[in-house]
Every structure is written in structure tokens, then in C-alpha cells.
Image (tube, rainbow, N blue to C red; front, side):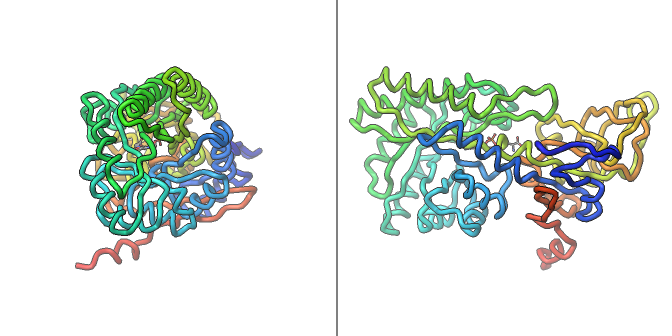
Length: 427
Ligand code: LLP
């Protein structure tokens, strides 16, 4: 977050608020999200791409009504991938034409709802789904705008579970072997759909532009084939999300304008060479918009020294509010937030309170050797895929998300309560 500092007492502040006061008011664990930072990142994406492109925020990274309103106000569109995300978007007032629906197995209800709401596009992921969307739209007396999701065969250098453009995985239709071209052929014959473009998403937490460039090159290649075979020029291409962020000081992410410049250059050049008009580009950043804008605040409960091994620092959350370390071996940093210390730094492992040894928040973390119960720890860059992937494991109560701005704080997603848990348990 851009407004983090330390005050004269050594207490970390965000938007001018002391974490000690925030912990007292909102409890721990809790996510604190810097609204100004979020809005600034939205604007950076908009400005990087300008008027000739569209930015769709990927709601899976983190979505709430407040987020939807900020996106709307800052001129972004929204990518949703479930009925739940769609209903949140619509409920918070995002105009349907600014929403895109994703997913590799959208239900009939999800498609119907999206079509009836009038979403701007549905990104079609399979032959069956193409037929399903066309059927539902026709019955509703509509012609649904669709893009076809293709896999371009790019090896994105990221964790296997979040790479999506190689061929042996569940998303999209492969360019190689002609499935994508066949989907285009079928789409062009269906009355219920208007094929407006081709979509590619190569993966997540990517640090260089080359994978995006190869993807753009191959997508334009398909546009060219379509033009040659059918005499039509599709007006849109979407190059997905995936831009990496800095979780630790070792990471060196690209900025939105670097991606925008690279993509525009390659698409313009290749379209000129192919004799095509330049399509409208869109992108779908999630992590790079929201990830850096929030941190998690935990309280230390116990400190256990294992002689000759390491010291385990247990906090009051863990894999129920951040599964990423356990799931992807993700790296985070951590800071003693409620005070400074002159004690020597000591190698620790920050762990949660769940009944699993893999319940690790930060695998290797240097903390002052006098870290003690009651200290507050801040883990930065937890805005993306932490609250949105949070669980009730061990009947944990999912933490709140508190928006901070100009010295003020307000809850945008409240903390779960035991009543919330028991309400669902109707046996
Ligand atoms: N567009 C599509 C079609 C996607 O599937 C995704 C992410 C995005 C955009 C946004 O990607 P981003 O810019 O946020 O990297 N849970 C994993 C990430 C899974 C991403 C899934 N799709 C994690 O915690 O790293």
C-alpha cells in the first residue's frame, strides 16, 4: 500500500491510522485495504491503455460491493466468473454491459442470468457451452456477444497450478490442432451469439512481457485465419490478466504502461502486416490492481523456540485467511507492526492456528528476537486471492476487510460471527 509509514513511536500507520488503534477497533486478524491506492492503480491501468482499450478487473482476486463502486467510478469494467460474483456486481450497480462472464463450466442458471441481465460479453470456453449460450440467448430473444477463449500454447513461467496457456489443462480451446478455429466456424453460424473476439489468458504472477507478446502474436494469427476463411474481421481481442506483483523485495514487477506499450506495439505491427484493422484490446488484471493495496494484521499468540532448528511465531489466523503459502509455496514478507525493536533479527517461521503443519503464513521471516505474544504483525500484499480464497477451516471466522482512507476506516466486508457459522448448520 502506498500510504504505509511508521509514526514517532514506531507504530506502522496506514492512511494516517495506527495499526494498534485499528487492531483495537476492528480486531485481528483483519485485512486493511487502502482505498486511494486501489483507485490509483485502477487509474494507472486506464491511463496505460487509454481510450482505445478496455480494462476488466478480475473480480476473483477480491470482490465486494465497495470494490464494484470504485471500479465503476474509476472507469473500469469487471470480469466475473460465477453467479455469486455476477450478483455482487449487479447489486452494487455495475452496468451489465460493462461485465464479462468467465468460467470453464458455467451453469445454465449462470448463463441465463447473465444473458437476461444483458452482460457485455460471455467468454465461451467449450463447444457445449457455445451451443448452450446460443440456445439460451435465442430463447430469451437476444443475441449474446461472445468471445472464444483459446489456449495459445505459451509456457508462462509461474506455478503449475496458476499457469493456463499450455495445452494440457482445462481452460479454453487450443489454437494448435484447430479446435479454436472450429469453435469460430460454429459460432459464426449460430443466431443466438455474436462472435466479437478471441480471448487468451496465459497465467498469473508473470514478470515479463514476452509471454503476453507471444500470446498476442498467436491471437492475431487466428484473426488473420478467420479473415481469410470467412471474410470477417473480429473487432476485439482480450489478452487476459496475470501481471505479477512484488510480494517480497526480490520481485521486480512490470508496470501497467509497460504491458500496454508492448501489447499495443505487437498488435498494431502484426495487424498491419496481415492487412487487418487493429482490434480493440482488453485486459483483465486482478492481482496487479488489488494485491498491493491491502495487508493482513495478525496478533502473535505464542513464540516457540525449537533449539537448533528455528523459532515458530504463531498468529491468530493462518491458512484460513491466506492459503497461498500452503497451496503455491507463495512467498510473503512480514513486519513487526506495533513497535520497533533494537533486538537482533532472528530467523522465524510465522505460522497460523490451524491443525496442520503446512499452515504457514511466512516460511522464512526475520523478526526481532524479542518478538512476543501481543505483538502485531503485518503481512503486506494480501489484497488478492487471500480474502477471496478464505475458508472456514476449523470453523475459523473469516476476517473482515476494512477500507482505510484519509485517516478514516470503515468495514466493507464484516467479520464472520459464530452466529453466521451456526446459521448454515441446519441439521
Ligand atoms: N482473467 C482470467 C480469465 C483469469 O482466469 C484470471 C485469473 C485473471 C484474468 C486474473 O489474473 P491476475 O491478473 O489476478 O493474475 N488463486 C491464484 C490465482 C489464480 C488466478 C486465476 N485466474 C493465486 O492466488 O495466485
